[in-house]
Image 1 (tube, one colour):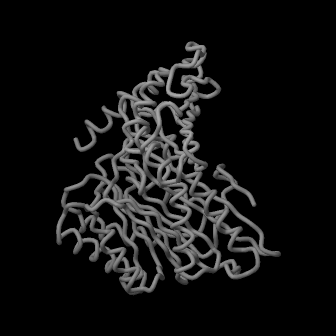
Image 2 (image 1 turned 135 degrees about the vertical axis):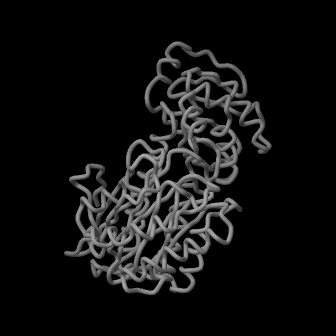
Image 3 (image 1 turned 120 degrees about the horizontal axis):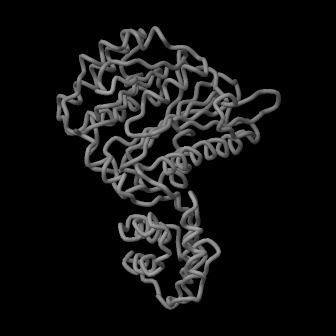
Length: 404
């Protein structure tokens, strides 16, 4: 199995076409429409935001997945407008886009999976999107350049595209998994302002894909946080084209595919945190000796969402008291006298009290682009790794100016 980040070494699954176009949704004039097509159809599975306020395309996606019995022919993504808080008009607009693309591709509308990302509460420019569809359809092809153009067109405040791939052999055949994502703010467990599309040429039924995807998401995209805000448009979609001829039911394939899917999703999740809006540091937060995974997650979120902790991280300040305080306010019935904390190799808090350490050395360590924080609870055997980042003034500037 291989896992690559270089664009030249990406594994491109068979059975898909991609394209992008500039419809004029974004004021910047950058590409804002993206298409992924499975000409012979694909099995599909998806996980969506936990926010009770959901964007119109998610409502349509859920309905289309039921109507199509988990089969999809095309994914249509627009960036620059979230089509959220737009009422019945927004749902009608999403359906109209599906119908228009379906006419171009000569398929039924329920085989189209729409996604939107951008500003909330702005009327959706359906006419602009529909006008851009013919160009999108004409440009589609199965090459690397087309796939990369798809990855670029779905971005909003991202500074770089997020792409990952993996592949494995099943006998003499090769199965490829390619993932592309966008997201750098409103990133919080239970998905975030995040659109993730994973394409594979394995042969799988929708129900099989759904089970694997749900499990993988819980350990990857649901274990990251930039700012604690859960978006309205979050989507993780997997499409399987069957092009390789290798089925999940074959000996050893299910495990190999699950491992490949996990690698791709883990890489994309980490890339999202590395590109967190205004972030300068990626923090690998380890919660150890919890009684359960859920308990470890609750404490990780309490730490990762604390502005006091995140600003200390921004200043490379080894202020372990803020970490301990966040553990205490998490709602978990911890015994402070059993809590110990490390910042890298620096043992800063032993059993709820200060432990002698080299503060300057810890400060220097925290100036690195990536570092580790470990919190040991002394309660049980469960542990969890959670990826997060610091909070800087640049984050404030990006989000203060976002809609203007």
